[in-house]
Image 1 (cartoon, rainbow, N blue to C red):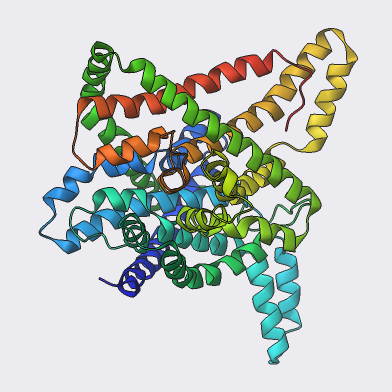
Image 2: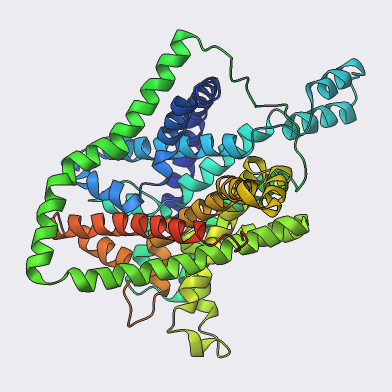
Length: 479
């Protein structure tokens, strides 16, 4: 199989899956908007819709690897299984985009006014198209393009499901070729072919992202009191139950008992301490990368230069495999060769990979945490007495806890990225995700499931500890 064949499959799949996911994301977004008057239900619905974004691809691929093995004699069935798993992830990504970019920069009045001066000139139609692309079509376009990029770049799930030749993806083809000894120069040349498609998608998404400043409340934002038809409600609710079943309920059911047995086996073998150490070091590297990416995103957002935003997000939007192979070549030049076998290449790659996501999180935090509200809470804190306590609590709820969650989310994505860790890790250190990825190809073992559980649970515990410590240090400012 050639790279051109793999690219053809990947491009066709990304177009079909992201298009199929768009209507589902719209229906679920309408359900999320309609549930705003019921706060608890709204939070549960939002969490269920976004859940696929936080379940590691390795866990999903490992859970459905045996299903893929039973479909080995049907290439169509294997491709459908992979496409279905991608569909739910992309639909969750598109819902997240609608939450982050819920407004239009062009009001309905402006669109109506432009219709009143309609003529048949090319200039009028071009302006009409521009108004719609920057207005009501901006969020759907960003969601569609983001889904296509995500699908095109996906690697871990495809690698674990690929029992025979299917599912066919360019990322797995290139990774396997490089691991089999393909010269780095050839791998980079192969990467350039995949970059053509990604650049075509990158330019519009960069231009459509909003600049820093107040946003209007028009566009895709829905009235929380709007009513849904029974058909829309049924499809949206069924989609959420399917998401929970595929990414949460079935993985827990299939692996839960083995995880408990595996923990006992690790304790009997005396391997728990070494695994804790391996996971802790991996979390440390991911945390450094996530905090650095968030700080860089804040700086880029504050400067508000379109060319700087493009320079910052293009590497990350190209995917982890492209970044890894490029930095593998960069750190082999004489000037940087001294730090080649260190943590620096892996951390730098993670930072570049996370920058676009960090930028979106900063945009989201600007919407959720208005500076006026935080300033008012700061005035309360400076007042002294009971008002100061109330002000500190408000600052924690409005500002700090959200920055902590944003850092934790980025660290979680860094921790579970296989391509960066396996390509750029130091020789003397094996990140936990690399160990899990290698062992997951050889079958199901109780200790493997237990280590996976520890890699998921330990970061959650550390986040809780960090939240308690940070809340008790009121004078530390947010990032």
